[in-house]
Amino acid sequence: MQFTKNIGLFIQDQILGMHWLDVLIKNGLSALGLDLSTWYGGGLAFFIYDTIKIFILLSVLIGIISYIQSYFPPERTKKILGRFHGISANILSALLGTVTPFCSCSSIPLFIGFTSAGLPVGVTFSFLISSPLVDLGSLVLLASIFGWKVAVAYVIVGLILAVIGGTLIEKFGMEKYVENFIKGASTVDIESPTLTKTERWQYAKEQVLATIKKVAPYILVGVGIGAMIHNVIPAYFVEVALGSDNPFSVLIATIIGIPMYADIFGTIPIAEALLSKGAGLGTILSFMMGVTALSLPSMIMLKKAVKPKLLAVFIGIVSVGIILIGYLFNAFQFMFI
Image 1: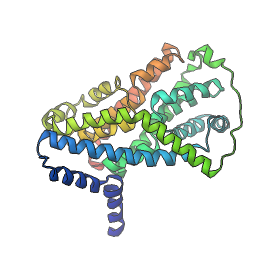
Image 2: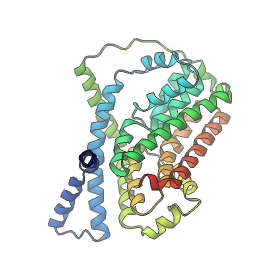
Image 3: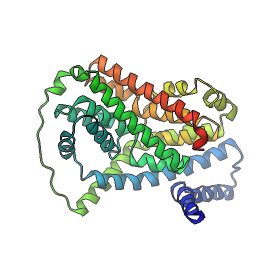
């Protein structure tokens, strides 16, 4: 039992967390004469370590996910989803969202395609919620910082939110609030060509390069903000504003997160820094969910496809869900950390 536990800790700390890289960078900076006890020394070490770690993990994960995704092109996904009805369709749609490593803005064109193909609006919204919120990459990256308990719990509650959100939108009869040009769009059912393994890996390589190019600015900004929080902002201020003892911390974090635009990979270094400063676990997760699921740019894009009433219902359902999840995690934080 202890051997298995040690193996698990080694995977989490040295493979996913890359603590060896942290030690290597700090030793290197110290050898160059940089004082790591200063805010700028510690901040530089944090920035270099987190940037390299996230890019390495992201490249490996996106490569694997994209290879899997090559088996589920949009045409095939539409056919699969079309075979299911009711809540089972919402569950499958949410699960399919986990193999699409997209930010919310990138998920919206697929959402539009699925809706124009005649899939129920609730099913497509389950996909729209889960795709930016939870994916296999976020599971591994979250595990590298918070541990597997938190990572798995985050993915589970994210999927539950996606299923409930899509189901409620369907029950509320929101179909009529999709813009007419979306419902009337013509679709072409094209069979996806059979790809060889070499072609699939080539596709995965192209997806890695494209994704890295797209998310790199947000990761660098996120790591920069994380380094500032980690080494400049006093722990006392973070604990007062975002600690579990503040009854409004989850609301504050969610409101702060919504206007921002980033994917989950860009929010992870900020979450890591907030955790080290004493922010509540549920508060941190609410911030991450607010950024990824309800970013202002993605809501502006979505407004082009749906009418204001449906947009308001979607934002309301997801916001309430995020806030409830945040308070739930804060209440049971002792079980995870």
